[in-house]
Length: 456
Ligand code: ADP
Ligand code: ASP
Ligand code: MG
Image (cartoon, rainbow, N blue to C red; front, side, top):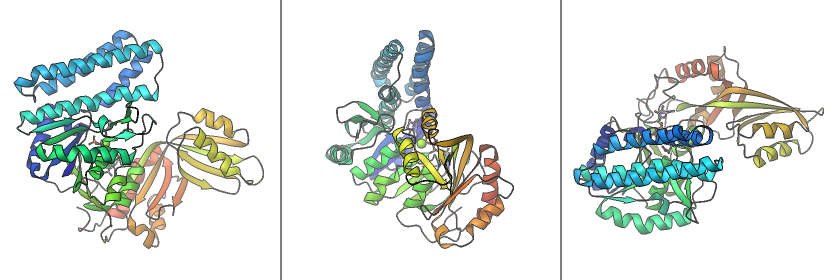
């Protein structure tokens, strides 16, 4: 068995779904279990509808729901066999009616909880998986649909839920291999449910994570992540278009890149794969012959010191100065206790004699954090920053990497530096306005010559 996950852009239209059917057909002998994301930008649209139900008029959100139904109906009708059109319409009616009722209820209550956000955003994958399953029949694949919410069990941390592995693996093992022996199994990514059966989700971009949970649960030979780029590239293509494909990379390197912003992979994806030592491949659904990126346990020998440059944007820098002359015993503990209690994860940290600088991603509770910090320190906030992170297994063995980095970006004001925490990364903070220039300079420095065994 193999797991094949197709992201939003790989199932965004009738033509895209037809391409996916072709790719799955060519690998039918591997007994594929297919995991799909919501079609195109559906998750964003669902969340926008939820916002409108809070702040807009009833006509506004009803119109948005209507548009989303039209989009699904238009694309799906072109890939669902004639005989199944009535079933398709029934499925769409049921789901969109439920969604409308849900929105009406929320508009009355005027409150959007993490639990209701999960209920709403789940419709994307619930619909896409049903549509793709019907489409596969149309393209001649014997197919079974499985509702992921019956398989993937999570804790109750809605919008960011963590799988309860033992129970999830038990359910997957009991159900999926039997079905996959007879037909192509199609499941939605991202969606799950709590032990009490309430719909939850694994966080934005979580379909990659679903794929690896399923892969580990059924002991798949391979987990394939099909997306819209040729694989892991040496830089984020939206910031620097001239990057090279990384042909092979280790689990540890890929995890670090994902954590520091390489959106191509959800950061938790490698966790189940590492545990079962299942290779993860990143492949392009528009260019299925390209061999993509292979993520495996051990990094292969590489002449380049850096494998890729990741960036995390919309970062806020928080500078905290102790109001006493020195940092007293317990100062750091007090600071981190506040961030922890107010559920604000910290990415990078630097300390000096009297101050601490750190970066955060989510500013939802920042005002409350600052109010508490100010009871014993001076706080200064700098928004619109970015973390740049160079990742490579060789960084730990190679002297002089820092000199090359900071010489390359010598015209940029570097706000904060971190190296050593993981051995395979060097990261620093710059103003978002300087980001493109920084990535271009680093790419020139580290990838003007490439090891053909590892890059192309
Ligand atoms: P999917 O919908 O298939 O899950 P995503 O949009 O989540 O696709 O991830 C793919 C995108 O990740 C690419 O289109 C690219 O813009 C972005 N990306 C960021 N960093 C990298 C990188 N280092 N290599 C490849 N893609 C990257
Ligand atoms: N549809 C979800 C999202 O947009 C999950 C995914 O695509 O991986 O975040
Ligand atoms: Mg994704």
